[in-house]
Amino acid sequence: MSQLDIVKETIAYLKFWLGVLVVSDISLVGWLLTNAGTKSDLKTGGAILGTIIITVAVLFVHKKIEHLISTLEDL
Image (cartoon, rainbow, N blue to C red; front, side, top):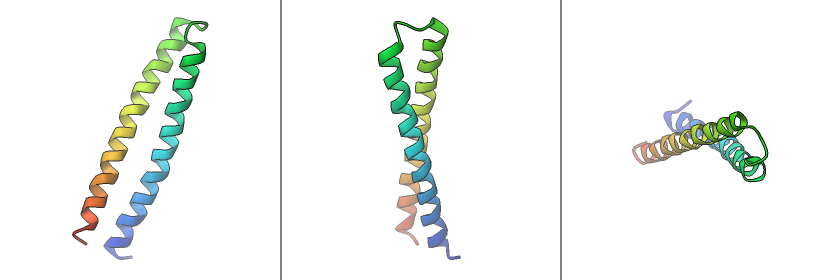
């Protein structure tokens, strides 16, 4: 496999996981908006923490994809 194909496949793989993370993030935010006042503080805190962690993961994956796309120019 050429280096170009490897980078393209890596980008495709990361795009899949970026989609999974974004859907999970949206779902957690939706849950928080509908249940934050009615559920226990532990569940609400866990959902907030999960949202923060997933959002940071989305940013890291996005930056990795951007980096790989910029390396395509050199190949």
